[in-house]
Length: 140
Image (cartoon, rainbow, N blue to C red; front, side):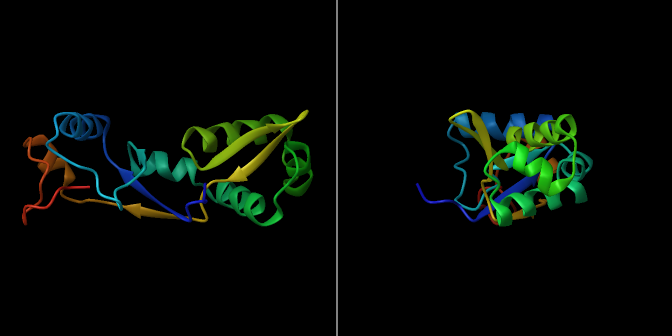
């Protein structure tokens, strides 16, 4: 499997995400190739997950390719509990993978780039029950 280089990130409330998923399930909306793969409920939650500290952590993992979480602790100077919490959050959102190799857990970035896809009209579109935009194209 080749590593995807770019991931689209979307911002939508829980209700908007649910409406979008229901439209997909009903066959009313087909996700496009460039649609967001990772969703956040608010810009604030995205900012917490992709904080400066976590961006630096992702960069260190991508560049240094640590052989273990212990190696990553040494590279970052962060305590194990703090680092573990950050890694679990990043893993939850699909931004890092944590694979067990023998007795150690190896962190890896899943993507090289994150692009934010912010649809300013999504709220009115999904609340009206119509998953299409003004031109009739499927909404992201």
